[in-house]
Length: 452
Image (cartoon, rainbow, N blue to C red; front, side, top):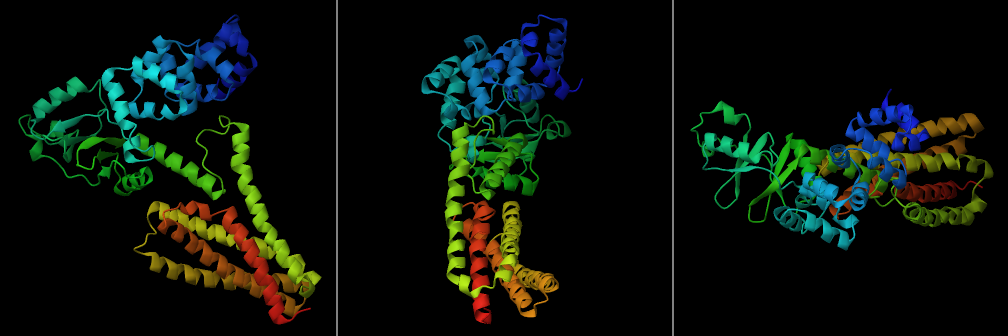
């Protein structure tokens, strides 16, 4: 039975599964616990918290701990508050320090104090040290529970140290090397420990780091650099160049997922939502979506004012094509801004090649204006057989396309330059601006052509 079928049957026979008072309920429970913890966590996150608590309590402590790590942050916070102290301590011991710091803003102060009491002193001190870094900085997402080696060690001593520390600390394919002052001097690869003589000193085989992240560097920039240099880990250092921790490929995937989700919301003219759709309170979601739509509606109302001012000069039959003109502006600007935002995000477009990009987009704007303007002219002519009206619509289309490509190219670059997210320029905002500008161009071109 595939997971979806199991979840569907458990939902129908939930009480029987929790109580295991029937043969079918026992079969479903056993089928559930043999699934991957990630699949179980996904199912638990889609049922009510009351059912979540009842079903979660039926699992063994080991399975509860494994499932916990695949839950969303809000469900992790809820789970920690719901379970007994004995299980709390086991979960806290299994958590990475950066994983725990992600929950700090989601729990009450008295709960946080209680969790600190259940943690080992060293872990508690490390968490407190991590709390001073911004959540979206390299320091906020790094893993400090990693192994580093002194440059003065020989390979044989390094191996003994790794064997001693590995169960307690993370070991990556790249091991970072420090000096006596804990300053980062380079790295070695794990295979170097078997490819060289045991008596070889690490200082003689150290490689330089392709990229080093500073503790206050933005996580999105770090992720871009990791992708650019094809790195699986990146070391994080302090202002004094001291080695603090590592950002791994797992963290990279989480950063990219988070940044991608934020960009999607911003392109839709929404503030980023921290939690999943069903975990976000209804009225909070309503406000996040509603307030900006109200603002856009009020801005869009200027279109009606413009039309009202020029209604005496616009022939009624030309208004039939107004929706076509409005849509081409929104579509073109959204398409252009999407290209620019993607280029900025990947680093392909930057301020060192911005003029080359703008020259290319200027030519693109001209060619698109010609193609779409001619297409609009043909479309209107074969509908109305009015050469002057067709020319007006074609000319207006070309003017709108030129403007929308220009704005779609420039606005994201300007936002990037002033430190804002370029994704805000895409979607509803730019489309609304182009609606107003498109109608304004339509009215003035008709006025210039003196068509009554």
